Length: 246
Image (cartoon, rainbow, N blue to C red; front, side, top):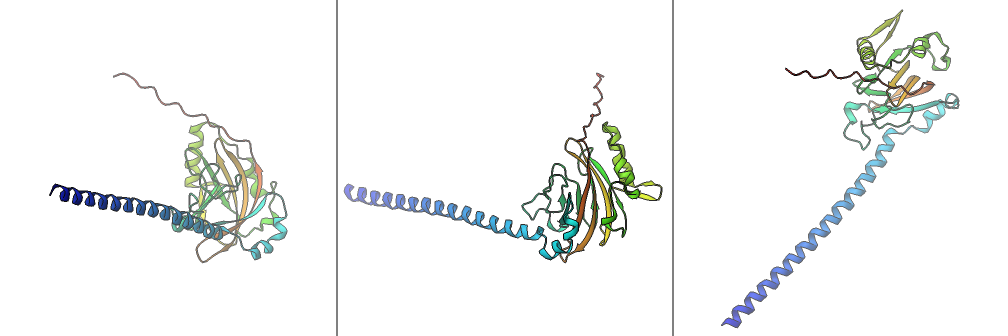
């Protein structure tokens, strides 16, 4: 009788061990398949993301003569409200850096497209401003053009309090003569803009661009030229008030 009970116990134990081994093997295979599928999916998403941000050859050909000039380019911005959080690129392809030539939001980010508006100045004391030059052909604009003068000659403040003051002024809209400078303007097709973007510790650039096309997904093509790169600005932080003992 004892031998029978021992045999039954041993058989059950072996069955349990076999079942446990099978489960372990099944989960190991499941894990392997999961990560393989995830890698495959990420690769496919990355390819589609590149296509979303790409510029068609016919658009490049259309602006070929202008693009042969130095410091020029053609870039697509995706609307942030539609693509942010859905692409691998941080910011959803809505941002662009004219110095790093990257869409990813971060250092030296100079422009964004969101809710039908272009904007500049995104973090801390960083700021900038835009001016619409309406239907002025981008080909006519140079660093010495009268409509570029204010943006070109603007002196970047080095003190944090002054930088934040400029941010507030341009946020409300600063009128210089008849020209309005703001941190955000309507993104209007067939319109030329001048932009100055100041990112402390990273970059300070002056750019002109023209919105040349708007696609069905809300993205816009910008034909651009970088007119000037300034010395990297440094910021003198405003000291925190000393705590007093009560």
